[in-house]
Image (cartoon, rainbow, N blue to C red; front, side, top):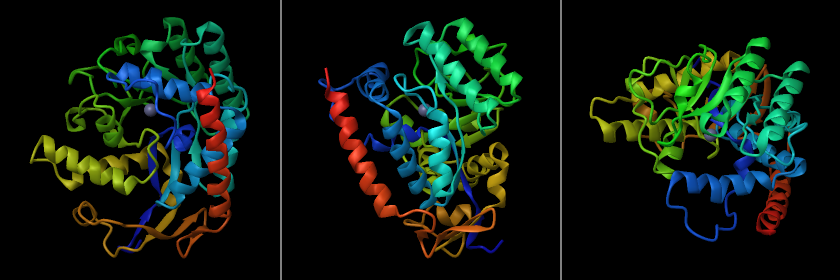
Length: 342
Ligand SMILES: [Zn+2]
């Protein structure tokens, strides 16, 4: 590979359903805690999702990933009023754009036992039908012990891991995952995990999201677990996330190096090995950590996935980006109206 090339970048934690959330109507009052951010923003948004809105949100998110040189997305989805079929809608949207995706439905008891069962069934249906994915769990603090056990069991039966938020806020009782985790699990955030926690799996660091929600700094260098990088739904520009991961690490300690953050970006290829066969040609001559940590505006010129140019001369080849942006804007207007319905 030439110095201006990399493999396809991997976003190890995304929420494609949140691509239309930008500009959404502000809640009646300003959230002042992480719990309120969930209740007043994200849980208000996800209740309003239907399959059509999910489709355009996923297409826009996949398009933005491709335009950022990210060819593989590990997605975590929740749409409590449109569960059945939702993972296939997301997988199809990504396939249309030409981006790889691993899907999971974030099971939760926050809408009762029936909601948890429907979420488990959507993961099971999608994996049974041969979809690439994991079993999703929202987080221990919104799941019963039975739901956690059922998700772990389902994942084992399909030989995949569980994709779960862990210790993002202080209140998460993550200890309830002990005894269930394996090396295939994806543990998202880990901000409030103690150094000596004994959970197995890869920890996914999402610096921009953590700063935006003021939940604290995970300081990932302290973990014995492998660490990968995600965006937690704020786009899929992994070069930008790498730059922020580096800057946040430096704020914490001057011993942090661009190589630390680069290693986290690399870890994505352990999670999504197929992306290593993708080739991204950048408009920057030296795709090395000590260069790109300090270079603004790096963009891909060409992206090849399985030998096919899905981006050429900076433009997607399979889809019309203007059409996706226009349809996504229409879907966003419909979503915003639904959010404001009493
Ligand atoms: Zn998340």
